[in-house]
Amino acid sequence: MKLGMGMMRLPLLDENDFTSIDYDQVNKMVDTYMDAGYNHFDTAYIYHEGMGEIAFKKSVVERYPRDSFKIATKMPLFIISEESQLEPIFEEQLKNCGVDYFDYYMLHNVSGYTETAWKNVDLYSFIQKKKEEGYIKHIGLSTHGNAEFLEELLFDHPEIEFVLLQINYLDWEDEGIESRKCLEVAKKYEKPVMIMEPYKGGFLADVPKEAEKIMKEYNPDRSIVSWAMRFVANLDACVVLTGASNLEQLQNNIDEIKNADPLNDEELKILEEVSEIINSNITVDCTKCRYCVDTCPEEIDIAKIFDLYNKHKILGRDDWTQPGNAYLNYTKLPDVGIASDCIECESCIEECPQKINIPEVLKDVAKTFETENYGF
Image (cartoon, rainbow, N blue to C red; front, side):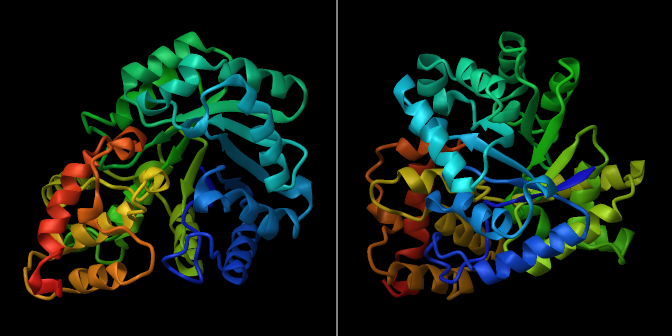
């Protein structure tokens, strides 16, 4: 299994400014990754508020020869409504990335949330044409849709060469995401699979204490993330993408995939139990993809707020907790929206791959944090 370096959650100089990429640290991460023998980079037009592809150019293209790496990026279906947008965006992406061609090019998050693009614009003919012209080596799509939806896509579009799917042990039997069933559909149509979200946005790197106890009792020498990596690394897929936010995380990912021996039956049963514990503790099933943030008219950092809210719920305390303090600090930043600023326009719901009713959750967040107990 090849380890891919995702460029969605890069280290920042300012944690509240997702365009303030720490290039010194990213360069070190790229060097470490390449030195380990890997070369598959994954980015997208919208990552880091439009800076993700540029970060790839600065840290990889400007520092390594073109034949030493592979680049995958994605057409931003979220902003496409007509044919005339395709060529300018594609040209901009080539310029952003600093390359003459893409090794892998995907339609980004083909789902009900982006149907304005894929129903009204002939995206498939466009990327097929770009492949014929030599600007793309392999065309594919990413989706968070269920197995039935994926089967419809692959049946209707045999030209698609590969798929990028959300797969991890927590989503394996999830009735909404259907990781296992989606993988089976891809195999049925003989499409290579790339895996995203192996750690479920960090949930599987920081599991509840009850779950951690079970894992450590079985094997105290294994890290918590090793369970998640071993689960995906032994599936029938070609690449597993991890979105490290610092050099230590990246090095851990490299070490884990190189030591990812298959899980035995007893370990798989433990993961089933762990999944039940995690699901009972997680309040908001957010993976911090930030698609909702980009569309919020009130400039609410929904992903950040939900992360604090989840941590608060897992702690199970109502006193002055670290998440509550962090939420208060966030509200003091200039030009940011807070949970109670939500106007319930529901544009965020349309963008959310996890199908979260974001306005309803924000109401609970406001009730939790925006109280006298937390300095409001």
